[in-house]
Image (cartoon, rainbow, N blue to C red; front, top):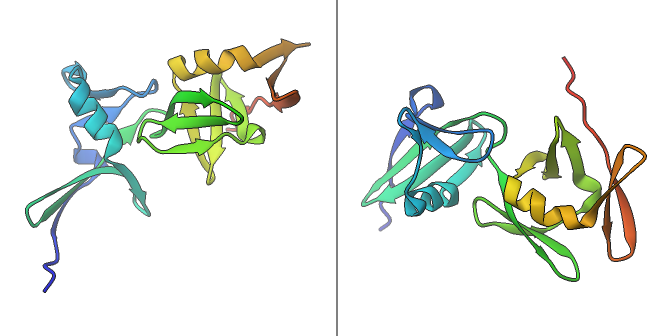
Length: 157
């Protein structure tokens, strides 16, 4: 017999932590400092029709805490250049880069994956910068003897 988990759901308005625009977990005391806790929170990110949340199971209890984020909930934390460039997200998920899904917005680099904007962390952007060239005010990704335009996405109000 399978026991259904009891759920505790905390709406984002009641969450005591959030993800800042650079991908750092924060609370009223400032940025989280403990790497194990930071990694645990990133790995626990999921999404449903109500938004992004972190969750954990303890005994017969599922805790889901929806959280606020200043820009995006997902970040590229690392890149693995090989025959193709793979992106490593803050959640630990990896996927191959589709160069046509890159864009910039307000001097930040993003990629669209499954219609979700994912922001490059400063570290990942620095690693990818060796493949990016600027020509006549435009940015291009140059990889495997191919050039891909990186368009700028402007805010619409």
